[in-house]
Image 1 (cartoon, one colour):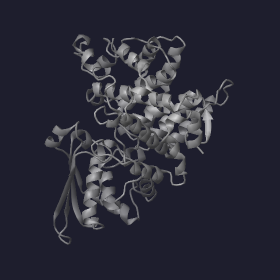
Image 2 (tube, helix red, strand yellow):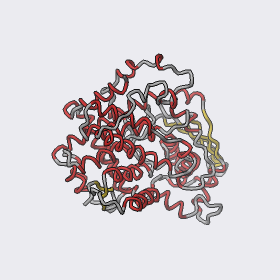
Image 3 (cartoon, one colour):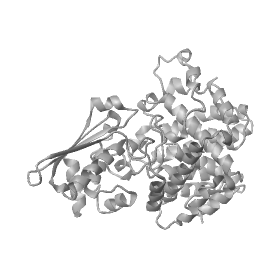
Image 4 (cartoon, one colour):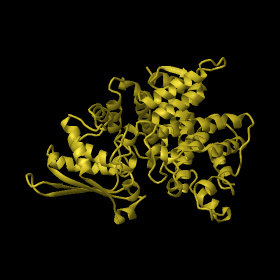
Length: 468
């Protein structure tokens, strides 16, 4: 059985098996997660989630307040701390992910691992074990089911993310193979998340991460106490693959479990990407390209007559020319490119200021907002067959701008094949720290040194130090 083999890997994995590269990447991902989540806790979706948890559970007489909510200065129970941190980790659209698996991983892995590790005073080595298990399982499953799963309208972070959280929680709670198998079976029947929430401009996208964490943690605790789950929930005739991935003619006998299992334990954590801009990852190549063009034309953006963006189909589908709220804006390729060409910077603070200046209103008196809107109105987004051939191994975007006769009367274009932050086009550690400082300018950056020697401390101490 497929999940039985996954359960065996989870149970048997040890810190000593991790490569130096994997451990280094894990620590970098933890730093990135903490900075994004610390700032993300200020967002409306995170605050609503926190207030709702407090409203529902405030009268509970049996709460063990042992897990921290990042950036809020309070503790709650393991389940709810993991849930709220999951929402906050994903809400800014700045959390890590994996290109081939088409999933955000850290926003599910770290809230799970942090809540359990702090509450049970686990060591840094145990924490790293759980985190690497999460990345390995998540990348493996995500690559197996995509692009078919995504093409059916499912948000992999919510669906496969539930299995990931269950794997991490099971490892850290030290479940045996049978208990892990039950936990993963329970995860499968709770796996949910629809892309309509993502592209429809709602907070539901961030909820997917929080609920994946919640359901995965709940599944592990239930399994530890004897609750059973289906052993064939993934590959069975009425299971995950049949109902949520492949077409109706899928036959379980046609699915090669052996081939899928060859990569168990061999998937490298190093292949994850880090995000630079608070927009959907599919838009990042277009942003990178627009910023290159911005460097060529400087502040002469008002001389741009029109803009053409040629990219792969999935990216081109993010062609919302009239976003109505912040959530829709983060999925809008036209606005992302226009903001890049006008502002020369794409950050959370920059976006928030533009929103205050009436970016999504019918009228704004601010010149730069007017210029952004003008570029959007004179932009086309096209799916390019040749660029489609490069996807999903690459995520290319070609941006072409035509200037008017008063300024050069020329055509400028540039192309990005892989956006900044991918393994082949990586962030340096200093860039991740700069990202952290940009998001949290008042945070004492010296606290982050505890991550360098994570193995030497208990996670209860690490969390306390990071929250000072």
